[in-house]
Length: 329
Ligand code: ISE
Image 1 (cartoon, rainbow, N blue to C red):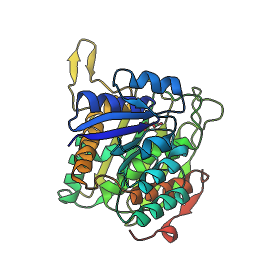
Image 2 (tube, protein in one colour; image 1 turned 90 degrees about the vertical axis):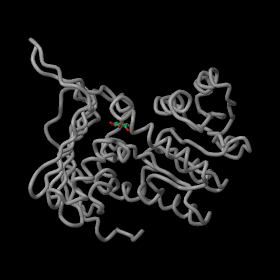
Image 3 (cartoon, helix red, strand yellow; image 1 turned 60 degrees about the vertical axis):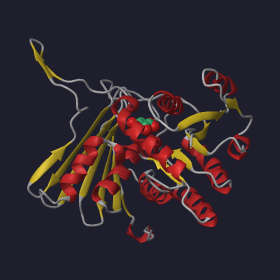
Image 4 (cartoon, helix red, strand yellow; image 1 turned 180 degrees about the horizontal axis):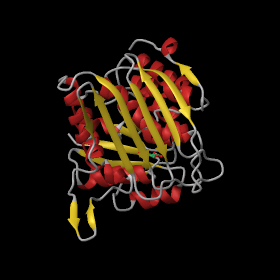
């Protein structure tokens, strides 16, 4: 079976997904596109021979569409994800599932009414080879228990439309989800510290931020979120265990040594650094849709990350307790 996919909001992420579905993955085909920017939709469908729809609702309800890929801007995800659930169609929604925990609850309620899991959230780092190797070392208890995790999430630059909240609910959300998945625990405490600002920031942005979290068992997690660091898209993670450490390497590529010194390439954007992870995530989703199964992060994962974001967004400098807000899966 070829899974006929409709894409809502094909910006940079959506276009990268279309390219991988068309050129690198198997079993899926993009048949329908909706974008608020009609000119962009027309440009995107042209080489695909896909249909442009006048509204996301019509795309979701079209009998020609088996499954939906939501790659629009986070604050507008909720109605399209709920409409997909109500149409009984699997939906892969890019992160954040929705920008607040309350919106994620409404999505989970719609899924419960539908009586089956239809929502997958695009937390692609769970499919990255190096994070998976790190998790294997932890899960096998080769070096004892996890004690600390140091993360760095650096973007070369962000556009002026990037808001202060996005540092938490669009950027740090990756580490929030990855830490829950890696440690197999919920985040119980979060605090956001504000260091000295870079001179490369836009005036409305506090850049960088340091998000400090504590897991249920007490693992202390720090996350430097620096979105205008100029030099690269630099994702680092060091897991400190009782008798050793495990760190991500840059890109599983080479280190070059010559008269200019020793160096290796660092990615410039998320599609470059996580290309294989995105491919694996999307291929697994296409396969699962074809089998009538659910795969990947659930709406619960989208909700759990949003709870931490909700506490972190206004919380610069103060500690927020999350334990009381936890709900069992
Ligand atoms: C963007 O949406 C991403 O998902 C990137 O991975 C992240 O580095 C960036 O900060 C976000 O805005």
